[in-house]
Image (cartoon, rainbow, N blue to C red):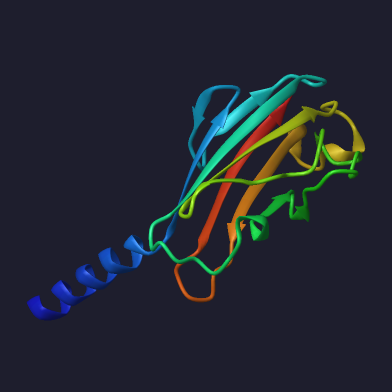
Length: 145
């Protein structure tokens, strides 16, 4: 039984070493996945993301990172969504294993049809679907007031 437990712990640690790591900042303050953030309707914000490849040879380009807003692909031109992108998401490679982007967006009105969610709640999901490694999938909750 101890061997089985040890093997499970070893495999769990090993798999986590090969996952992508992402760090998020909203307007200069650290944003933690699962955290809920209140935004004022009409306000503009900058979401900065640093993506680090732990395994050092990721075959999935940073541009393949998927952003879903209330389960819909979040991209420029979708002005009906509750968070409106000001420009396309562009990644900058700082090194072969570190990539960064800054996403500027405006919070829509809390009562608009695009707010889809109770009391103007919005779920932003960030996904990196890597077929070789563990990948990445985290969610943030924004509440527009």
